[in-house]
Length: 174
Image 1 (cartoon, helix red, strand yellow):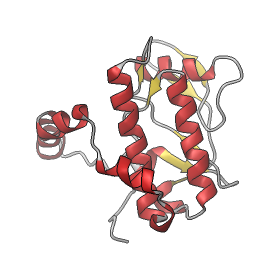
Image 2 (image 1 turned 90 degrees about the vertical axis):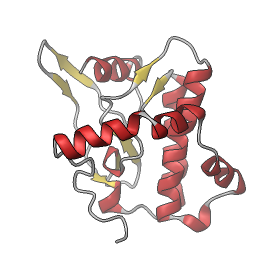
Image 3 (image 1 turned 45 degrees about the vertical axis):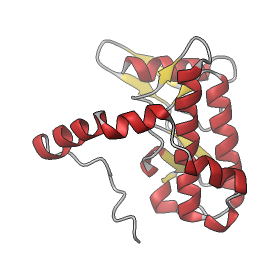
Image 4 (image 1 turned 120 degrees about the vertical axis):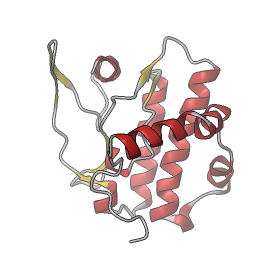
């Protein structure tokens, strides 16, 4: 809750970012955020190139504020508003950084890679050569996580706790 509060507070400073929830209240046990009308990406299935251009701009503005989302692989964290614009939710794993160092660049690269994976799913013919190169390069941080921590995380969450990470996402092959 504190991580989400820090990230959303930073992003709400000044005029705030369109497509990002605003912090309304925080107490010892609850964080209240503004509501963003929209459908999760896996339901809305965005096929307009303008959606992905706007999503890329939103992500750049997030990173310019030194906020890394860290959970953009989940389609449920990307919304498509009724106007066809992108919005982001679920900042529980977000990092707020004081400066843009090597870790921030690596994690920001992974945020972007996750957006581009979604673009590859819904609009593969619109990927540029640069975007294909970005998709082909996983950061060192991500490679280490996938080889070590993710295996432990999946074992604990899936086998021991019987959690599912794909809230409402259904089968990706559809």
